[in-house]
Length: 188
Ligand SMILES: Cc1cc2nc3c(=O)[nH]c(=O)nc-3n(C[C@H](O)[C@H](O)[C@H](O)COP(=O)(O)O)c2cc1C
Image (cartoon, rainbow, N blue to C red; front, top):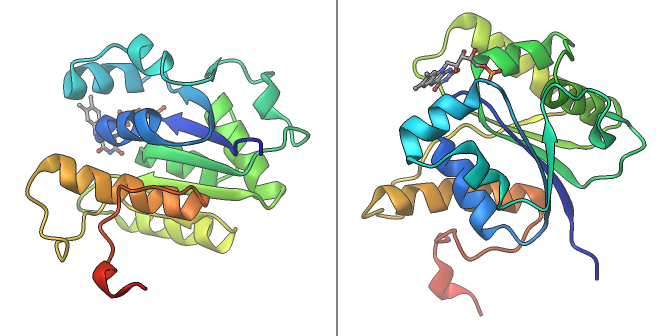
């Protein structure tokens, strides 16, 4: 059976470790695009270079290349995930701006009614950000904020990261062992 095709956009919000974990563990073909502002955050937060992230993906595209394969509605993919998603990218997508490959591919996902999962990270949220998220939800996107759960009794940042990344994989329909599921022991 062929692997699922997932587009992963990484933007300049805090939380590069979420994208790193997804790249390391997702069982799918990843089409990766990193925004020009994400590199600084990746280096600052993970100590890795943007190129280290690129080595983990099967396909890599330049965010300035709005003519790349994934910019067209004719490219078939299962899900697009933007993780972490900056308020800047979120605002652009919610207003229909498609001036980079990430925002173009996201606009395509919306028009083609494909699964678009945005993982914003910001705190607190302005009214503008909340309204942008509402607009995107109404347009069919899934807003999955980078919010850890505490009922899983996480012991480390890695535990929290795994929970959030695993839940995003759930939304993509990707099997994963990252999520510690509620009352898992009752499963028969
Ligand atoms: C270390 C660092 C952390 C940042 N964290 C966030 C964040 O959590 N959320 C956010 O919306 N923007 C954050 N920003 C600001 C974005 O990087 C900035 O708005 C940028 O223009 C986003 O561009 P992009 O959407 O093209 O990636 C951060 C910037 C830096 C340098």
